[in-house]
Each structure stands twice: as C-alpha cells, then as structure tokens.
Amino acid sequence: MQDCYVSRVGRTAALMARRDPVVYEDGRYARALDAAQLRQYEEDGFLVLPGVLGADELDGLRAEVAALADDPALREAEELIREPDSSAVRSIFRVHELGARLAELPRDPRLLEVARQILGSEVYIHQSRVNLKPALDGREFYWHSDFETWHVEDGMPAMRALSCSVLLTDNTPFNGPLMLIPGSHRQFVACVGETPEAHYRQSLRRQEVGVPDPVSLRYLAEQGGLRAVTAPAGAVVFFDCNTLHGSGGNLSPWPRSNVFMVYNSVHNRLMAPFHGLAPRPAHIASRRVGEVLTPWRR
Ligand code: 6CS
Ligand code: FE
Image (cartoon, rainbow, N blue to C red; front, side):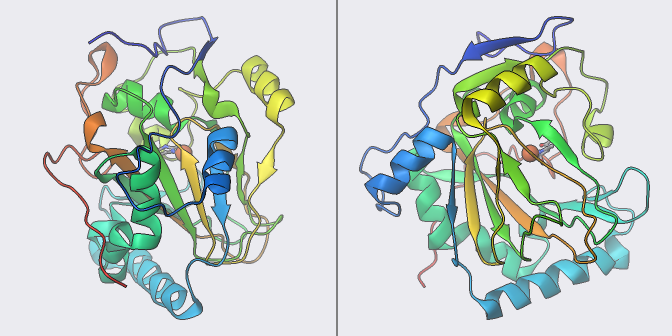
C-alpha cells in the first residue's frame, strides 16, 4: 500500500496537505451534532461539549480509575505507565477492558453517536487510556499528532479516527489542561528521526521521536493559535486523530485526570506498521477484527 503520509525517514521535516476528509458524515447515522457543531469540528479539528456527564457518573468513574491505579495486580502490568522521573502513575491503557463503568463509556450514545456521525461508519476502539496527570507531579505531553504515531507505528492507513476525551476532573489553567492547535489537523507534519525498537516503552513516558519540528509548530500555531480546554469535569472533547495537541505539567495540588477513547472507522483498520516496524501490543493498538460498537440505550 502506498504510504501517503511518509514520516520519520531521516533528517527532513515537512508539511503536507491532508488528503483525507475530516468529516465523513453521510446521513446514515444519528445527527448527534448539529450543523454548526459539525462545521466547528471540521474547521478547528476539535469540539468541546460541556456538561455531558453528571456528577454521579463522574464519581463512579473516578473511583474506578483510582482503584485501577492502586491495584496490586496492575503494578507491573504493561498497561500501567509511570511518569518519566517518578513512580507516579502517568497513564493506564486499555481501561475500557479493566473497569465495569469504563467498559460502558465506548458504547455510551453521547460519545458513540458523535463518533459514528463524524467518521460516517461503524467504529471500534483502537485504544483507550486514562491520563492521570497527578497533583504536583504530572509531567507534560509534548506537542504531537496521534495519527503520525498511529500511522507509522500501528499502520493506520488514513485519517479516519478520532479521540474522545472525558474530563474526569476540572481542567484549569494550572493543572495541565489539554491544549490544541486549531486547524492543525489539515496539515500532516512529517517528523525527522527514526523510530527506535519498542519505541512505546519510551514514548508513552516522554515522546521525543515523532514530534513536530519547531518551525512547523510555530507556523501552524501562528495560523490557528493555541487553545487550552479549561472546563469543569464532565465536559467531553472530540478531536481529530491529526490535530496537534499536548499538555503542560501539573503544578497545582489537584490532579487532572482525563479518560480517552479512540474511535477508529471499520474502514480504516490497521495494516502492517510502516518501515518494517513490529506491531505494537494489543493494549496500545487493537487489531481485533470484526469488533463493532453498538450504543446502549440510555
Ligand atoms: O502512542 C500512542 O498511541 C499514544 N501517544 C500519545 C502521545 N498520544 C496518543 C497515544 O496515547
Ligand atoms: Fe495524544
């Protein structure tokens, strides 16, 4: 298969125009977003929906995440990622298969119907994780495009996937809120460098390969600005797989905990990773064929 988004092939960074649609809606699925919201998502590459989850649901999800972070059975598990310079838990992957309430999230119609509408197809979970960004200790996630990683390291063919981030705690200016560059999804930033063996063991703690060069970052930020998603817990952010995003460290005495469900179109299933890389493990990139999500009834 021809590689339309060549990246990490040596010393040259480049910007190339996106070849894929942003919104694939063809009217077959519920109109979860109205025309104005869909336009906003297409324009910016993300959309913030405030107040989607209620206090009781959030209490239950936070309790489940806390139990996972403290679970002795997960202490040495590959799903659990610690901060680069402390033993604090940074992320837990595959959470939708580790907790009962977390297992319901991917099929929650408030999330799933938006994903199916935007991606214009049946969808499955490519990856789920919770980023805990603990108080006073949560380190940054440097700017990156998820698609650049999922394309090069997981063999994701096209930009027909999106992330849905549920804010489990308030995201404030002080605790490392998710930041995005509006409009950056329309350019693919080809990164310099070569992917190390089992790169995920390093990149999930601190990503240094597969990150955009400063010139491209500055160019795209000057075009679209920077947006920090500061919102109360319960808000949900949908962002395109190629929208540049990152988050600063958490210097506040309160945690910033967001759970991410990554929806991929069933027409965009993973192929072999590019450049002969070994496929990443299932807890980071699902290759389960045939899985399709159906919404539960509220
Ligand atoms: O490699 C990945 O799949 C992960 N890395 C980042 C920085 N964001 C997406 C995903 O969690
Ligand atoms: Fe990311």
